Image (spheres, rainbow, N blue to C red):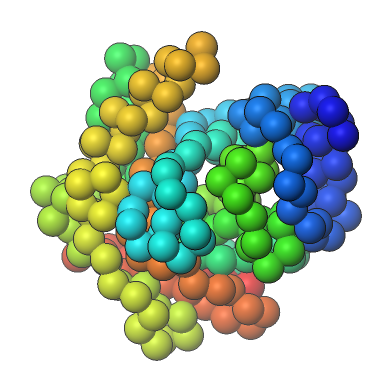
Length: 233
C-alpha cells in the first residue's frame, strides 16, 4: 500500500470486522494514517473529545518494546460508563489506569479525573512498532472517566486489580514525571502537526502501570486514594 487512505481503510476494515492483522514493516508517515483513520470514523458520526498519550511511562515502554511516547485522538464513541462492559466487538482488550486532565481554553489544566483506558490493538498479539501503533491511534478503544482527583498528582498512587487480585501498582509521576509535563509534551506535539487543544478536551496522560488483559467474564478495577473505577467484559 502506498497511501495513508489505503492504510487507514485496511485498519478500519479490520476493526469493523473484529479481526486482527499482522503489522507491516513498510508503513510510512503513521500520523497521516492516523488522521485518515480518524477522518473515516468522523465521517460515520464520531466526534473528538480529547487526546490520549501512549508510552509516557517507562513501565509501558518496557512492556511494549517502544522507546518514545505517541498520541492519538479520543472519540465520543470510545466512552464507556464506569462499571460497564466494554463493547463486544473488542478482540484483545487490555486496561491501563491513568490520570485524565481536562483543559481550559488555553490548553492548561482545569481539573483531573480518575481514568481507565481500554486499548485494543488491531495488530495481532500486540506485536507492533511505534509507527504501526501510532497509525492505529495508539490502540485507543475505550475510556472510562471517574471521579475528580485532588492533591499532588505526581505523588498519587494507584493499584490495579483483576478479579480482586492485585496486578500492578503505580504513581502519577510515572507519566513523564508529572501528568502536567505529559500535557506539555502533547501541546508541543500537536503544534508540530498543526493542531491544538480545545477548551474541555480530556487528555489521558498515559498508563501508570503495565496494561493488564481483560478476558471474557473478568473485571478490572483501579483504586486511587479517594476513589475507584472498574470495567468488565
